Image (tube, rainbow, N blue to C red):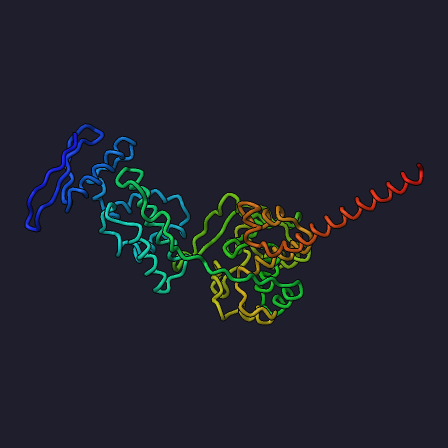
Amino acid sequence: MATIEAYETKAGKRYRVQYTKPDGNRTMKRGFATKRDANDWLAQTQVNVASGSYVAPSAGRVTVGSLWPAWYKRKSRLKKSTLRGYETAWRVHVEPVWGSRAVATIKPTAVEDWIAELSGSGKSATVVKRANGVLSGILADAVKDQRIASNPAAKPENMPKKSSRDHVYLTHQQVQTMADSADGQWSTLILFACYTGLRWGELTGLRVKALDMLRRRVRVAVNAVEVGSTIVEGEPKSWERRWVPFPKFLAPLLAQQCEGKQPDDLVFTAPLRGGFMRHPKTGKGWFHRASLAAGAEGMVIHDMRATAASLAVSAGANVKVIQRMLGHKSAAMTLDTYSDLFDDDLNAVSDALDSARSAQLSQNVSQKRVNSASE
């Protein structure tokens, strides 16, 4: 049976609640300023006990910082680049604010205030989402272990959205102009990227043995991404591993690029020092000069991938083919990413409906005339 009792403190009268936990043990919650507050808390607690959602107040005293190591350890199978992002988010944004906080003291509005502060300080949507993702993941563990009843970071209302930019789609002529303006391997890389749609990390990790010159296919099974100041080689997600075709005109260029190399050698390498290529810097270097030559100011590396999708669509490829070529998880993802490429398909559908309707109605009219004439 639960009881509510008053007691005196230096600050005045307070109330405490004694009640029975689900395990049968008696416990106490104190510090209520009014008897009504105590009654309200007791009523909610009794509902939680009856529904099986009860969380002992003492369980929520554990800090966010004490739960971080176990959460991070369970992520060890993820890519090194992903882990590095989590570690940076924790060290720079999460730990300074939440590390010493007891999980039970964190409120949704406090999390939203933190998100607003990060966004207001100029942090990108990606940085803010990753930081909140770390905090939310840790608090989700606290919910699983019945330390708190719900996750206050699960659904913030003010999470910023990534600002979308229009893709740059090059024509065949613009691609060739880019390639002609680039030196050495960069010319071949531009053509290869714009006609296969490989990601930069997939281009960076591409080895000679991945090229099948007879079938004109490239096997995408490795990527290489920058993690801090180093480049780490790894495996792409299962749906990103694929065979991608390349046009016949690329075969001699790739053969020349691979001349004298061993099967395990990289197809494209960093100039001078060799090894993995580095992602071109925005606004300078070979890629910037080549894109300007093609009249595509503001173009980024990923736009070569978008161009590959565009050129494939213009050649008649459907969305499923584009999905397989680009290594998207689903056709829906392809449509969401490059929906503007399929606008002409909508026009084609309406034109086809027009034609089908006209043909059938004309046929019906002709049949009626034939029937009338025979009567």
